[in-house]
Length: 247
Ligand code: ADP
Image (cartoon, rainbow, N blue to C red; front, side, top):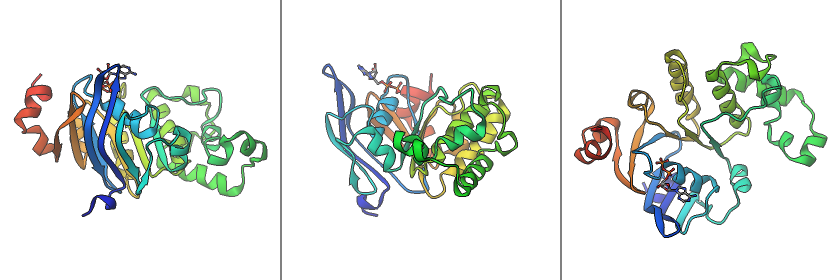
């Protein structure tokens, strides 16, 4: 497989903050249909890496290609249009709006100012809302005010809002934080479903959850990749046990 066959190709990526290299010469390839989990101790550079891919932070050097198109230098909103979606830990939903409305306004046309003026909830948009609501398991609460949802449901709604934009790369930061055991199970199933046809990158600390969902695990330490491979391989890697799992 050549490097151009990967959906996401990060090569020689470096970013410095006041001379401190938070990410140093990092190379990472992620496939389509792949669910990659990034683990590593606090301060390893996991969040910074996702910030660089989505354009929230600009790289000092290196290259980030998505579907063979260079992203470095491209503004964050243009990367969203290229199909890159990012979910942060705290859900940012419209608490006063219904689940349906939250999904509806996340339809790409509903987002821009001019689009919103012309925006109509056509049958096609309604169908898309229904399909996404079903995918995230919230089709039975479409009319409920979102502020009344459980913590887990709010997280799923935000994933649904990203899905409305038909992303091809989805990045999620600790998606199960604060969830009940049952919500974790449902989230694992949801993540396995949504990586079909796209790439998903998840930052996670809960090793039981990582083992359940990861196709491949990347272990970061001090801005670099310490190990990469199957959960079994990284779990038994002495370097990984030393800096992360042994604690
Ligand atoms: P992780 O997500 O693995 O816990 P981070 O990516 O948040 O790690 O941070 C990696 C390192 O980069 C940390 O030492 C952090 O303090 C530093 N860092 C991240 N963002 C900035 C910034 N904007 N300015 C200065 N230092 C930063």
